[in-house]
Length: 77
Image (cartoon, helix red, strand yellow):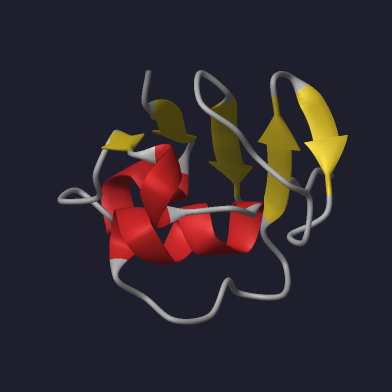
């Protein structure tokens, strides 16, 4: 079962060709999911990540069936 990858807000617009699924054999951590989905080496420092709806760091391990989401920083006034 592949890892489901979601991009939100401006990331969705900035990365229109990003993959929405990544095989677990391609990625062992959130950071590796980012690379496999986007082909961009580094996650920008301000990106927020979650695994299965829980805020996580980029070195968090992932497994088959997980959902990994990436969010741009949220600002308000």
